[in-house]
Amino acid sequence: MRKLIVFALMLSACQGSFTSDPSNALLQEADSIVGGVTVSPESPLNQKAFSLRVLSNPKTVQEGDATTTYYSVSQCTASALTPRIILTAAHCVSSSATVHRIELPTADGKKAIYKVAKAIANPDYAKDGVSDLALMLLEISLPENIETLRLPPRDVDLDLKKITAAGFGRMDGRKSVPGNLGILRTVELDVVSYSKTSATFHVDQTAGKGICQGDSGGPAMIDINGKTVVVGVVSKTRYNPSPDGDHDYCNFRGQYVNVQKYLDWIFATATQLAKE
Image 1 (cartoon, rainbow, N blue to C red):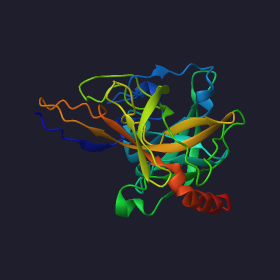
Image 2 (image 1 turned 120 degrees about the horizontal axis):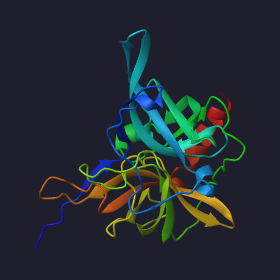
Image 3 (image 1 turned 135 degrees about the horizontal axis):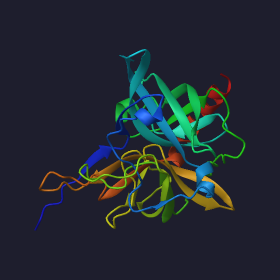
Image 4 (image 1 turned 30 degrees about the horizontal axis):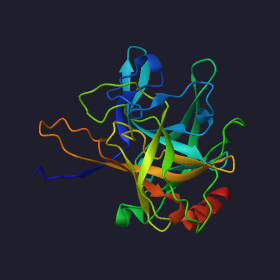
């Protein structure tokens, strides 16, 4: 009998370097949620899940008469609790980053930039590696057409069976396989373990669908009385290693932080940020 070995992988994705001029982008890794469908420009999901980019390690290069700054860029996903307060994963927050920012597509095919003024990661995450939540305060509010997500009710067994995942992460868990960069995708996933008192819950990814690198911080969503409720935040995947070393890092389970478990921290931290 083959022994089952499972490893875990954090899901922020490093994406090489880029400049402020998109035509000079040098992007090394691919993104898109595994086994999902591309979200159309008309879909309401564009107002619920957002691209979070973390820029760090600036390097200024003189190119003729022009000076260009390059950054290391990592990809995460986020959602909004208010027009200025953003929910994401703690491991998407970098103390060494030059800037954290939300990037929204515009009608002319460009991107609107919303910089983060302050980010607070759950302090327990450094100790337990489980409390993978962070809140961010934007310098200015997101546009009026975005949808802020509701938090789940307290002390109610949601009996989660399925969730809707959305994110900008890889379309395949193998590093040898390319994909599309920064495209919002969505997929419905089966929940295999959930308790209102547990810190995390897991989704099944053995059928070729799931979350992957770059989806970190993305919301697990359900509908309650016609409102979109965020019940989980993407944290990591668990995978079975491949004998040839070309591991599919997203082939077994996806792990979400259970928002219900952290409502006290979320409310307290959001109140703190709202005073900034």
